[in-house]
Amino acid sequence: MKKYFQLIAVLFGLLILYSQEAWGGSPWKYYGTNEDGSYYYDAETMTRPSKDMVRVWLQSAYTDQGISHWVRGGGEEFQNLGYTLVLIELNCVDRSVRSLQIVFYSKNAEVLNPINAKEWEFFAPGSMSEVLYEALCNK
Image 1: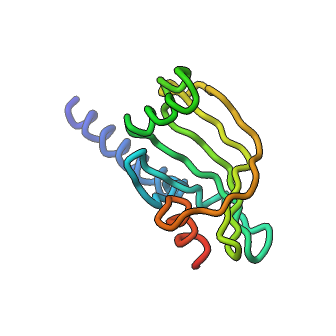
Image 2: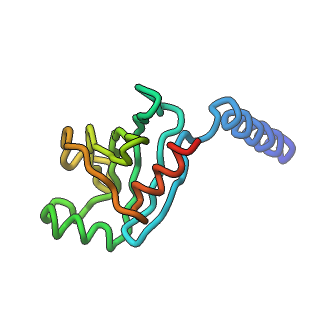
């Protein structure tokens, strides 16, 4: 009986290893951290609508400080904030960014508050947008 369980464990381990290789791992690539959280972009769905433009989904995982900023700016509904997914366009020539869609998720993965398109904004030196610009536009 013990050999049977060992065989099952080995087969299960091989299945997990094969699955990770077959699926290619996570599409989310880390690009930075600040006091508000950690930030990732989806390398698999990233597109270039034009030579100087990048369209990509971002994921922000917040620290307690980051959640506090959202609570102060957006209200108590953000107290249970877990993460956001943001579809952005990054202009590599003008060094500007705009959010096309922002979806806030609770720690239980429930949608809190979706927001649509914003205007173009120039990003500040040292900001997370500049870090993303360096990672995606200088390739």
